[in-house]
Every structure is written in structure tokens, then in C-alpha cells.
Image (cartoon, each protein chain N blue to C red):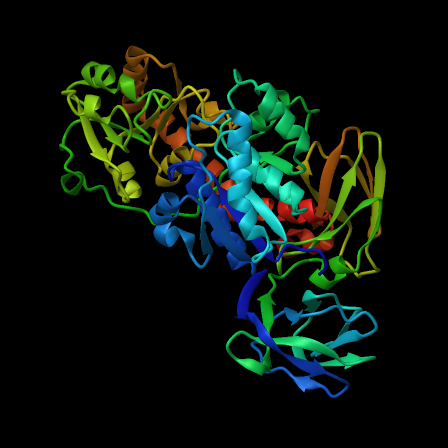
Length: 358
Length: 205
């Protein structure tokens, strides 16, 4: 075939390794399995945290994060200068650019445009209340790239943010591979037996609703809220009496098998992997409408909650009491997660990359 | 499509002429060979179990040809193939993919004729599909060469961007009419449910 991307540069301009970055590495490994050569450019700390998740990709450490005190235009230029040296010796056929926030990779995309490298930028979180600063808007006008977002609603919001016509942005919903079923094991996880447990997985911050955990724990006592993850609220949450903070965990399937329901009380999300993990594990899902916006079948696969501890506690109690309805939702969630899996996500990304080169 | 064997291109090369070079490779359905330079006046010919696959004027980079490859030779002026990384010129850089069984064979998609803005796209050795980019109110057509299908067929389309356009399949010519701007892949055909080939009815009688 001619004009197909064989050599792909993946740019991850994030300060930490989170869900968006993990998803990008998941796609990178898929592209390598399809025969492409991949190099991953990221901050040295992010590359170190990625470890084995890089697979056979070539790591390219670069200082993609400008110091906080730089003005917008200087920060964009900083990132462009950081990526430029690599575009000569290891010239890629195409670039896949992870954008945890829509404008986070404008510098890299500007440099890729200047070098004539076709790029696909994937936006992960797009809030409805964001606006572009004039300097960001000026930078966007210089960028020639194809764009995608992790859900259809996010794609429509990105078009609104950028002032573009409808359907210019593609959607690449996240997908998970099938997971080995795990056995419940509360003892190994240090969790109490014989009481209801409600688990939240992800960063312990206000966006994810982690601050609600103490009040929810009190409302479902003697049940407890179990938090897996790390973040700015961790120290505060460790003081709460009805909350168990496990920190970062690798054994998420075992955790999901050991609890009675999964909670995601986010105020914004793209296409959260933790929902897919819960769906794959057969764990009942309690989540806000915003957290489930990527799935049109949200009400069939999960209980919709408000960001209110009493409401969450009431829905949790109802989920435990109405076993037949809960089983129906669990089955539907599993079906939805299986219908759009990791292979579908990788394939869609590969085709969009190829279309960017066409 | 799955990559089952790979030799990455190194810095060595071998000249390919009219004498067939046997390829001792795992059995696959798609072969990629790597050229360090464009061979504008030559033709890359791969002898396969089913005949021969040819690629005129192969460009620098990976040239991908369908079929279970046995040997390779050049027509026209000799040209260079890249040697395998760390293995030298005796072992040409290559990739072998295994295809999943498909109703329309991979090679057929690759010879699609496309009227409109688009092409046949794939990533590396991934499944190739005809692709059309349509403006609002625009139309396009994809023609595949004649192929015997076991029954009536309806097209299976994927929209990479925008809504799916109206689609009409006549033989193996697909006509698309777009109400809104979109990018569309023709993924395959589904045999019509009432066709004999796709129905359980005969076995239930």
C-alpha cells in the first residue's frame, strides 16, 4: 500500500500518567501489533511511570511541559521546540497526539504542521464551559490536523469550542479488552467482610466527586466506601471513619469482584475506563449522567445518581435490594462493553490515522 | 489481519532482478517487502500459490502484495530491496500478515476504483478498505472488480466522521450520496437474510 503510516509518533504532553495516557498507550500497542513502528514522546517521568505499558515502542523523552509562569504563546512555542529535534532523525509518517485537555498539545501540533506530518489529535476531556483564549485560538488557526474525541458528546463540544461545523470531529470511544474473571477476596484487599461496600476507582479529586465519600460512608453505615486511587484529597479522606482508602491498585478486577457496586460521581468525563472495567467485571454501576454521557444506553446499564451523598446512598441501598433489576443492568453493561472493545477502538484510530494521511 | 512475521529493514540491501528469489517465509495472506528507494520503471512481482501479484513502480517504504508468497522477482530494471535488520542482504526485510476469512477478499478491496475524494486506506498491514470523503450534498462511487458472491448483498458502511450517507449497491458498485459532510469506509457486504447462502431455512426443512 502507498501513503500508509508505517512509522507513528505518539505524543503525550501530560504531567502524569492517568486514564487518557493509559488509553493512548493501549492504542500504541495495538498499532504496533498491526505492524507499525511506534515512538512515544513524553516527559521523562511519564515514560518512567509507563514502564511495560510502552511495549516495544521507542521512548522519546522530551520536556513538553512549559514552566507554569510562561505566557500562553511562549508555552506553545516551548512545546513546539521540544518536539522539533525528533522530527528529523526519526521522521514519522504520521502522529497520534494525546490531548488530555483540548489545548494541551497545541505546541506539538503546530510543530507537526510545520514539518508537514499528518496528525490525529485525540481530545479526552472537553468541558462545556471552556473557552479558548485569543492566543490559543490564533494557534489553532495554524494547526492542520484531524481531530477526534473519546465520545460523540465530547466531539460535539470540541466542535463548539473550536467554532467548527458539526461532525468535523470524529469519535473514538474507549474500549477494553476482555478481562479474566477475578474471585472476590476482601481479606487480601484488607476490606471487612459481611457489610455492603461501594467502590470508587480513579483520582481522588473534586472532579471525580471523591469529597462526597465521607458523607456517603456515613449514610450507608455499617457499609463503607472504598476508594482506589490517589490524588489531592487522599490525606483528608484517610481521616474519614466510614471510608477505606486503598491507594493505587493494579488488581482492579479483584476489587470490583469484592464490592457490591461501583461509584463514579464525576462532574465531567470523557469515556471513563473505570466504567468499562466495572461493566466487564459485572459490578453494578452507579454514576452521574455526565460520567456516562459516552453511552446512549446509560439508563439501561447503570443507576444514574446526583452528586448528592444522600441520593447516592439511597440508590446504593435500592441497588442491593432490587436484585433482578440490578442483574438486568449488569448484563446490559457487559453487553455494551463487549460490543465496542479494545480492538474496535484501535481499529477506528488506525483508520483515522490512515485517513489523515490520505 | 494479524502480523505473524517481521524482519525490520536494516541498512543493507540486495538487488532484485529477473531471477526469482525464493522466500522461505511463514504461510500468510499478505506480504510486505521494503524498498530503500523508489523503483519508478520497474515492477515488483511476487509468485504466490494462486499465481502472481504485481506492483508497478513500487515506492520507497513497504510494498504490500496479497497472496501466499513463494518467491519474488523484478520486471524491468533491477531494483533494491532492504535487507533485514541485523540479518544482512540474504534475508530481505519483510512482513507477513494472516487475514481473517472475509466475504470480499482483501486483494479485491485493494483494486477498488474510487470516483470522488478518497482512496484505499489501512494502517501498515491492517485491513484495507475503500474510503470516501464527501462534502455536504456531494456524491461518490466505489467500484470493485467483478466478484462472484453467493447471494444478494447489502453494503456495510462505517462513518469515520459525520453521518452515514445514502448508499446504493448495484453489483459491486457502491454509490453514496451525502446530506452532510462525512468520511465513509466500505467495510464489506452482508448477504441478504433471505438469500439461500445466509439462511438457516434449508437445513430446517
